[in-house]
Image 1: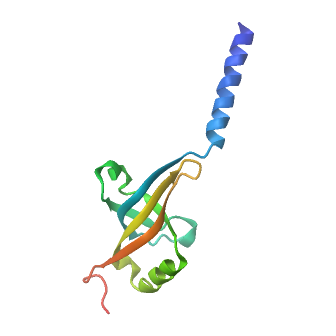
Image 2: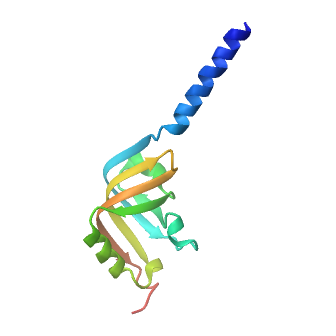
Image 3: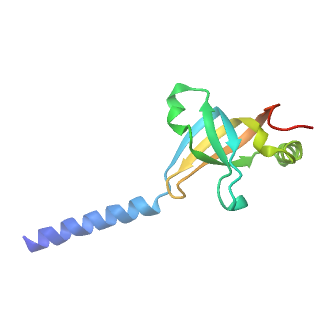
Length: 126
């Protein structure tokens, strides 16, 4: 009986370690989301954008999740950074790309292929 109990514990421990080590990702291909920059104080140490809406009903659970952006092309990223250099809190951002959730990092990431900016005219004055 004791040997059977020890074997059960060993199996549970092995399964737990496998789950912790294995980086399982959830992916959504060609997703469109709308985000706001949250201006967190720690800068780049944390995802800066919060999802405010999604295009599809099957991803509604993502609303209010923080997300990290990775641009597929450096020129798109440079253009994006240049366009939002001032008054970043006054924009909503539409991003299109492949979306992932890493269980290991507990983090949402979007590999941005394209974006749109939506300026709240009442927020910032040029």
